[in-house]
Image (tube, rainbow, N blue to C red; front, side, top):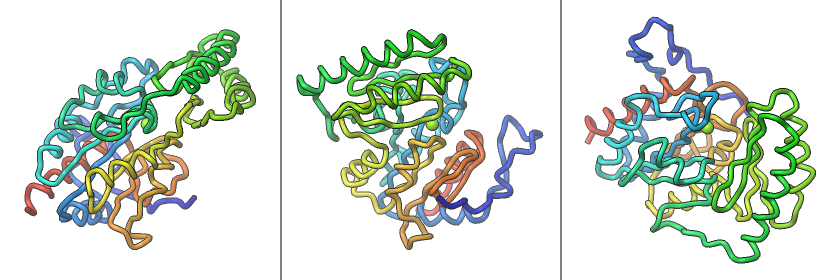
Length: 280
Ligand SMILES: [Mg+2]
């Protein structure tokens, strides 16, 4: 992992008007300009912590005002496809974000796609395996107050954000237990372990979307460890490619660019929309 280049100028000064920024980092702006000039592009973004600020109740994680409008406007522009790629199940992602056509929604870390991409039906064996995983995770969660199970069509997640310090113990039990069953694919997140019965990653999701769209370049924004698998399939200027990988917030990353928070994301997306509108 390498530290991305610093982006002074993207920091909020706390005095700005509702988080609006009038300045942008020259390096990020240059990347957005080059990206915007390409004929066919895919703009893909994680949801939580990027479009929607992180809140303690995940059922109330709503988009930052203005961000979804900008994504819709981008999606309406010729040659631009916009996708939300989330660890959440696709139905919840659509409900919380308000995303509908033409925005593409991918749920469960790439386990659930829009119709027209790769719909996946579970076999009976996989369905039985998922039931076993959910039963074992539930056994663990029941012993740790605040721990919760999120059940999705192709996976189940153990959330310990509200379980206090014991949450780490619960996650370790899940890693040593159901995560080791043959055919189970584990994905680590912030205070969450997701166990899928189909192979799914955000990196795989971006490959599928890139091919389906025929994109000349892909922009991806993400804030979590699961987003690293998406950044890893992109080739940006550092490796001679046209893609733009953007880590949101602090932490190690393989992404080539960084934005501080969802306000910074909103600003950058507006800048991209402006560039796409002006330059064409
Ligand atoms: Mg996130």
